[in-house]
Image (cartoon, rainbow, N blue to C red; front, side, top):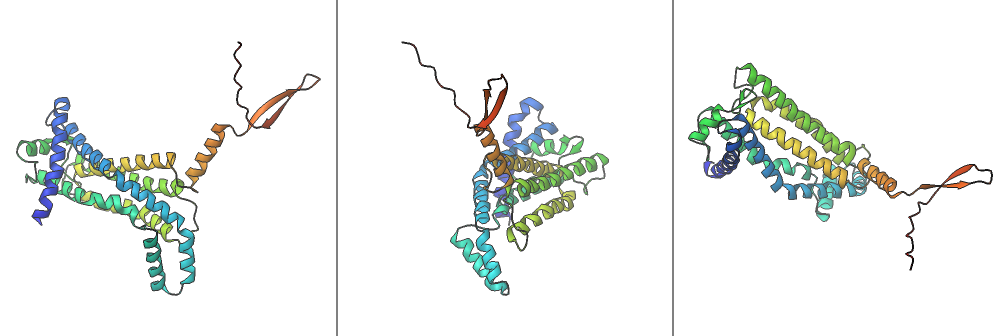
Amino acid sequence: MGAILNPLYSLVSGVIILFHKALTPIFGKDSGVTWALSIMGLVVLIRIILIPLFVKQIKSQRALTALQPHMKEIQKKYKDDRQKQSEEMMKLYKEHKTNPLASCFPILAQAPIFFSLFTVLNGIAKNKPHGYLKGEYLTSAAQAKFFGASISQSFLGSPETTVKIVTVILIFIMSATTFTTQRQLMTKGMPKMDSSNNMMLQQQKIMLYAFPLIFAISGVNFPVGVLIYWSTTNFWTWGQQFYVIKRNPTPGSPAYEELQRKRAKHDGVEGTTTTENSDGTTIEEKGQRQQPKKKKKKK
């Protein structure tokens, strides 16, 4: 097991150390700000690397949306045969090269990094080095404070009130951002679908409530540094998704309809023209917006 995990420990700790060295001249070697920003830097680097996977996730979600009518037909045709229904569904996914679990890929891809970071930060509390986080770096990280709480301490692992307050706040942020990100996708980024026997919608609803609950329960065991990591990655996910929904929404979604209305308004599909009657009164008439004519240059 060590042969598999050691490279990950070295990768995670090495990236943190690189950011730490870059930030030390600004905030100081032992500053909690330096170590917190180093962990955030790890998040930014990982999420940039995962952008292609995020794009694949979006494409897969939209492909599933397009397959909804076919999925409904299969469910109706084989409603009394669950096994045949599952076989036909898998065949449909294979033909269209999509995966109903694609929305979980970014989280699954981060799982090894998350586990490695958890182990590295736990090692700080136990004075046990992992990867490049050893010697003076291990001592410095152990002394670093984030709003008065050591980055290596957890809610259950420390009797200090400050640590418990900081971890509760971070756990709340971690769970709340997970919930709002998923809700943003369901209310604005997905086309309106029939909720009856809809596999994709049911999956999204489970994720809406299950993931925040899992984070809230398991968060009491996470060191402050891990909570910083996961809260930061959640903010990144929310912002990334917000940008996609705003700029390139899924056809048929509320965000897409809103974008179409804005474009129509911006293009000025309807304008008003004013005509004057013989008695001096004016009448406004709606019609096509006329483009201004260029004045001819006098020769």
